Length: 183
Length: 183
Image (cartoon, rainbow over all chains, first blue to last red; front, side):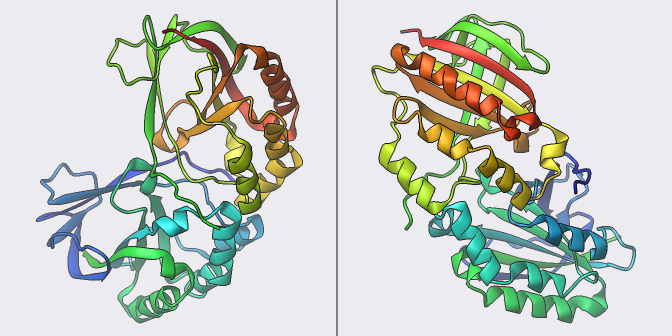
């Protein structure tokens, strides 16, 4: 029924001139953009940064036990050698979303098939969610994805489906960074 | 359906020799204690502190929309002039709790009648929940209560019921500070 859950992990995403990921493309999907950068550093290097986004991993807020068990059996870890591409999607949800109660947010999450859509792209697309909102950060979530070059079309398809969902009507700021391993 | 929700608010609870609340009693309910202090400062004074606990307010994690509506109609605000007593209950839940999925945690919360028990003591007991776990703090939650002296027996009764619940089997560290307004 239970599995070991690591304590919250704080991570900085540093946009600047150097870093372990090269920015291939930056697309502002909704709301205000961020200054363009050539690299993203996630390795904790104290390199100069034009901007820093901070998030933490946490317990799952919507996933049910049976769903989590399915995910655990399918999903791939981060850091696979073949996953040379990555994406960082900083996302902010609207005040209207945060004014909803837990059951209302859960209902929208379910109607939007958020879990089912993600499942369709496993294990190709590895994913980790960082929470930012509670730190007073400009975004609520920093979602991180890693995949092989051959799977980027599938990744785009997944984003199309999510962005067409009811849940995404509550997203009022979103930037789509596409990255390649710099090393 | 929705109501305005303020953005997360960060607050420090500073234990030391000075502060806007006088410590009347400190009782360690479970797990390791904290050094005893004479006062607690919540007013943002940069007074020297023996320890500092930090938390943030956030969106409700379990309360349903209908429940929230009921609460909004009954609950009292913080800072009532007659509420000269307060309590700070730093609480940590066990790794076993955090390893549960959202639906499992919600089921325990409901079986434990957490919402219903709290409701029985409104509007006498005003309450605000601060989250700490995601900041890497020693406690997961800092729960703050304010009430008039005449209502402390009722407050004790509420705690007895909560501590006897299934949910509290997952509490592995808890300290009970009873405070009085210092001014």
